[in-house]
Image (cartoon, rainbow, N blue to C red; front, top):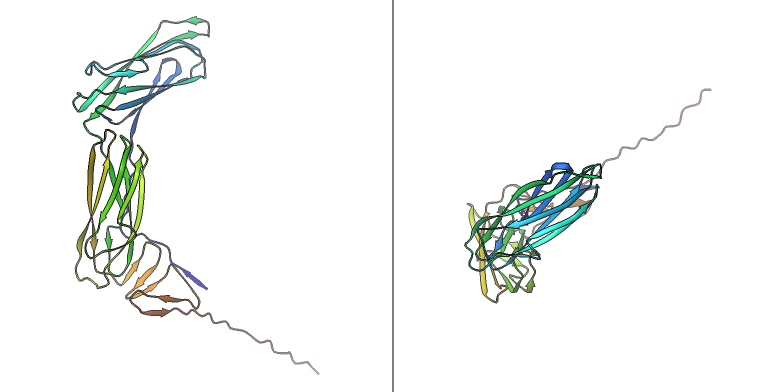
Length: 315
């Protein structure tokens, strides 16, 4: 016979994946749908890619489709392979995708700029008669920042208690550039032990490719009477794409608090006072306790058996 304990996370875990691109969707005349995907940020001196997907969901063919790009606020902006895209024809139900690259000059000030897109097409009525050209202007916001950076995400419980283990996960992401010679160092509080390495090295982390490391933190054996915060420091050093050495850091805190009478652990185990019961217990299982106390959980079922008595025969 088994008793199953449902896992319950201690505290609230927060790890929100970042969004690195934005999308503009336009439903235009004649059933022409345009989807423009652009980076949320571009670093000065680096390149950003804009993707355009156009679909002809109308009843007629379209001809002389064109996109023209201009950003007057940045005269030295380089748009490759060209500052315009043209299509001679797009049949009903057809689609086409194109990319352009923006090379941001080194002397541009950080801020939000607008890339102007002038769109036009000619609708062919009944797929025979060209109509007057249709024009539409779209403004694409381009956010430019001075320096590339990395993002550090830390996932751990909001609170912990003594004489137990808890998970800690760290994710490092460089969304702007490839980085090299990466070292991730975790500096725990003096009262906390680590099950795992506190220093991790990577020769290279590619752009938009998160790297995650996981460890266990071991809390002090002695119980605490009041709660207090324990700071964890994460330091990341690396070399950027132009050979400069950089460092980023993050400090996160977790609350060490007194243990209550009943605590559910992250793996589904349960503390009852000073006794620990594993995620599931079966008949005869003996559970070892970190404090050295042993508890034996015995479950018995009583079965009542009824004996059939022979019936007396009538004379």
